[in-house]
Image (cartoon, rainbow, N blue to C red; front, side, top):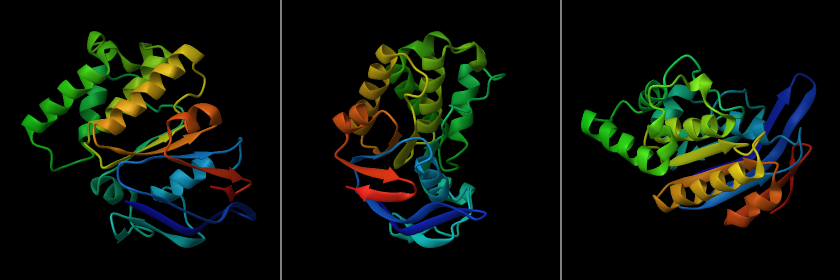
Length: 217
């Protein structure tokens, strides 16, 4: 589903990624693990078209997306749940969810309603807080909302950037259980994590990033 070949990214004179290659097959949970500054977030930004690539290629569902605009990549079925959640704090939970569906212009009203019902089953806590402002939720609830908003576009692949960041261990366990449930719904997942043991416990395969290079698969 996703094939990254010799991907390089520079920030000025600094090499953030140096010719990394990896692939994600349909239905897999793949994790990229590494310490702060290893290049994990940059990898997702490069795949999503949010940063300039110095070299290499990215293929998604057989199409080269290396030079494609971010909005077009999203419309192909790629969801990117960014680090730090990035929900819309002034919008209600419901409005945040509806905003997610805008990533897929092919969705019918009926399908959007079906997707909402799926989110309510997956995240019952969000259903209880539909009219609350996103910014008033706890950290764990905001992370759930960020993931749920991404799922509202009915993507083929879900890329999660540090979903456990800043959350209590018991909340983290719940988030990882949810990731497994999302995979069981037929989604493919690329997971970026500092919490290596948790990430590897649910992943089919893992890649270790260190200073912009993959040192182990």
